[in-house]
Image 1 (spheres, helix red, strand yellow):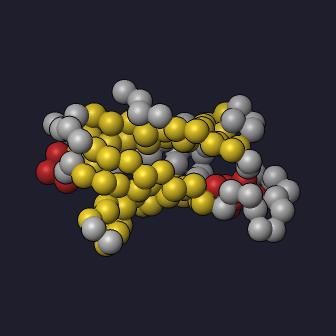
Image 2: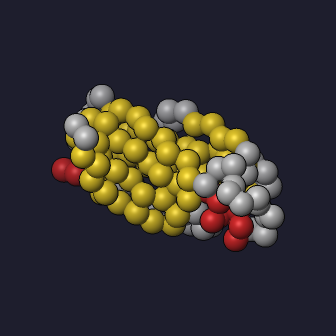
Length: 116
């Protein structure tokens, strides 16, 4: 069965991105439906899969991470406006399988990949 999970790594400090808010959206045409939201745990992970079982469907999705709020809470002095306020990852789930979408982030850059 399909499943979607995520985690955040704070590359500026070399540790898990604990306490970062995120929201998962499903995209259908021009519509965007919020499916899940949460805050990463001490390991920088969502506490549970964002999609699984009957809730998992192939299609287009977005994960939106509140990056500036996270780094400000870590005591980082960011400019106003911050270079990265939110990071939006747009991706597709084309098969009924496990997808892991990590975010590696600093106040000035990020990367992601399809994990396993």
